[in-house]
Image 1 (spheres, rainbow, N blue to C red):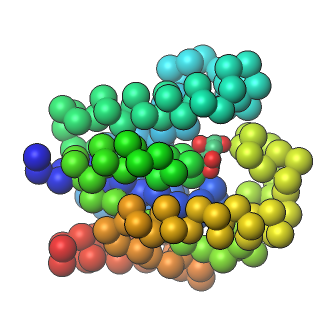
Image 2 (image 1 turned 90 degrees about the vertical axis):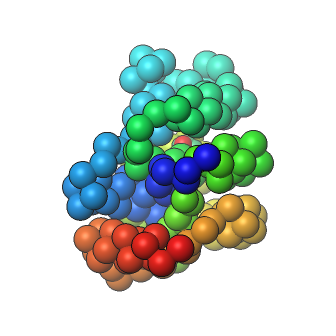
Image 3 (image 1 turned 45 degrees about the vertical axis):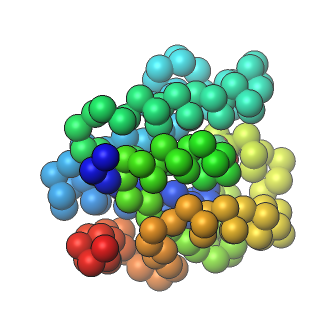
Length: 171
Ligand code: S3P
């Protein structure tokens, strides 16, 4: 199958949604924000889904969304931060698209997410130490899934988007 979609993966606060918006504008391709899609489809916040049905249920919703993209027209998908932890998700993404990993330092991530309360994994764990620890646990999964890795510290969404377009064209 043609690798048509563009998947942005990476830790919470890596800038996936913002960069997907910029890419969407620059390439004129529709964008799907996974969390937003799931919230609308379920009619509940991510916090409530975790609380009421548990994390595994939420992870199933993410997988279902990805499998449903196979026959759709080209889209840019900003994935939830946990998506690349499941090997079946990575297989689905590899079959149908190019996977771009956005990275940032734990300090940058902390700065970007510290005032948000809509990420159940971070609620009650909002510290650079926790972010650093979880990032290290996830790093090998993110890196193994990625076709392209982009560091985002100190860059604007427009610069990151241009870098992605350039690197995708070189694949
Ligand atoms: C999660 C990341 C969140 C959201 C959920 C779980 C994670 O998405 O899917 O809170 O496990 O890393 P963002 O990466 O868009 O914040």
